[in-house]
Image 1 (tube, helix red, strand yellow):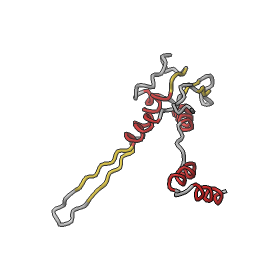
Image 2: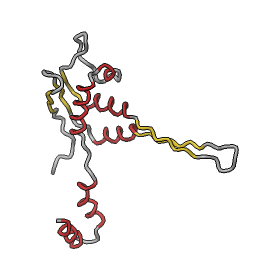
Image 3: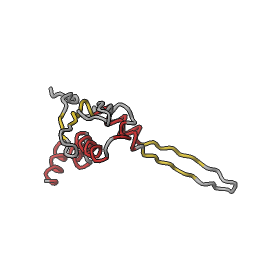
Image 4: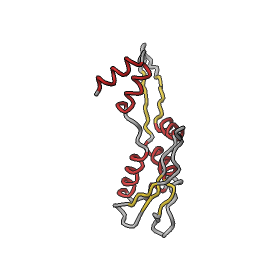
Length: 148
């Protein structure tokens, strides 16, 4: 049977923005991706009742971009050779490490992490979704042929 577990093999990425620098990255397992999605977007609904009839309703949708990036850096970077100004190895498990990270280096690492954890688009899932809603094998094959 095919192995459906996340690879534990780390991928080395040499940094273009920092010659000699590298990071070893590992993909997030599905459970961690779910945790990131859940915590990265927080929705709360506050209902404000005014003195007049029909008070206003407000929906706040807070994207927790910083939390999500800190989570990804801590969970995806399994090794690196990046140092702070004092020669100490950066610790991406600490949220304040991103505060001292060079923006160009951070953006490059962020792009590699995004590439590694890229979630499938709806188009990629189309054959799966079609198959799960089709009533017969012939109908599914006909729809697949029509798409090609």
